[in-house]
Length: 432
Image (cartoon, rainbow, N blue to C red):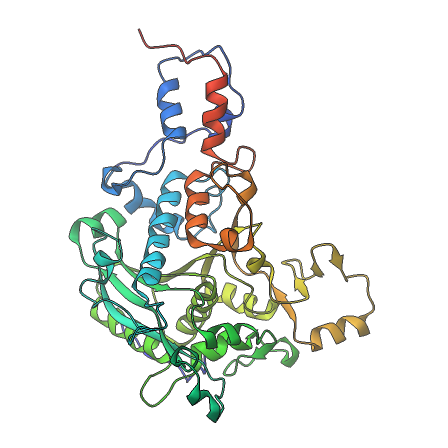
């Protein structure tokens, strides 16, 4: 297999038998049962959390269906109710993003502020991801292009940091884990907003053109958020751009493992979720014969317009967005949103009935975004674990992982609710 770069782009075992939906068991409890011997197994599967030891799963189940769990069929039939193996995969990739947060030095008084606190060889272990089977191969940095005034030199150092450590690339090298996964997996994990300039970049919410793409219709050019694009493509003499780092490392790894089954998974939270989608678009655009690529994002804001979404779909990039409907960050930026049916609208303010002239003015404002990818929509209000609902809690990555861990289906949202219902009903007949 030959891997080359296209023209520069500036930013760019045993299969288990089918199981009945969990909701049948947790939402319609009966005192009678025709098969009492199987009931306890069903209850145990429903009420127990995701096991900490993933290796206790049948060794070939995930290996045979991994492409389904990474969106080859757009996660059809796996999200509602949520498939238990998919739940495990989502939480596993969320732990890689948590490692990025744990490894980042948030202390403004520290001499290593905005850098990675750990060496690559020990990063995952020291950040709490034990026994993952992955090794970190590359540290990633993002750079802001916002020009700093001269007087900024008199301000605290934390206000002057233009480039900061934002994540890493890791490769699965453990033979048992490779066997369990069914392929060698490359993961790119990206944290959310942390530094002052990253927050300022988030405020640059207008859309900007993606150069290097020649659409059939000039007005249908893909566009992305200006601030996110800046963090992805900007660099300095001493610090290459995130785009350059990712292209270089991904191409190196694909050449190194070109004779093996490979997958590339990009995961991120908040700002990292937006950068993950840009990175996926860039990799699929510039690297020929790239492997199956999927994005699993948490709490990501909108990142591009409808044409950008259309190009992602044409590339075959699979995107699963984990969305908390109570998280305000997932509802910005953009005053209006182009739905998958092409209608421009936003929540209760739909403008499809407006004249063509007004719709054109709206689009010319460069604030018409599109929802991208497939959603697993959750809600903090359905979780009995959360004591309060506020902006910070709803957007927190740990909240997202707790919601995924407890979610059953849209008609019976959480396992904790099933536990309460179980206590109020008669006991399941014992096996004699």
